[in-house]
Length: 109
Image (cartoon, rainbow, N blue to C red; front, side):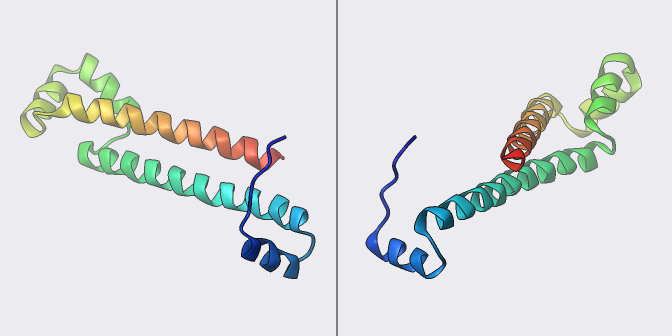
């Protein structure tokens, strides 16, 4: 178990809401859920921006780039830096999955 130091004012204020340890045990999960959801929302926003830019979802773009020469030519013409977009899109997808997993873990407790 880890000990966390709190300012006296924080402890005094927490006492107004009940047992300090109980307040912290209630507040910390709520804070973690809020912050984790914020990260999920940011990743989802970035993922959606790429989906709009390429007018389809990531899996479709990835598959089409590998199998459809016409699609690849169109993408290269309209988005010369598509490879950078693809790497960033992958990054945000992984961030989204990772934070969703964390949220599920936090929510189970």
